[in-house]
Image 1: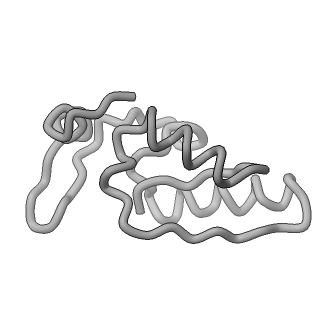
Image 2: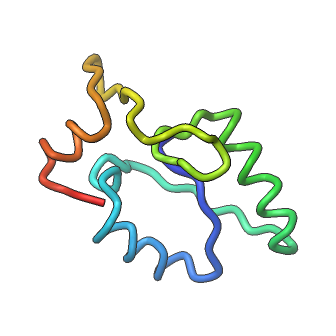
Length: 89
């Protein structure tokens, strides 16, 4: 899992991530799940970030995005991977 987030306008949020998020080129699949209200979505978002250990989530984890990430059989630091891909935050 790369990232978990909440948005009212999913397409606008994806456009923003495509331009600003170093993990975007790594995303091969996205799931969209709607909830009845924002409070329910925030509770589930927090649970998913923590249980799935979403690599690029900083909010609600207390962990900086300097964790190592695995791409195939290779482990690399997040910033190094972003630099290699030519993307930035």
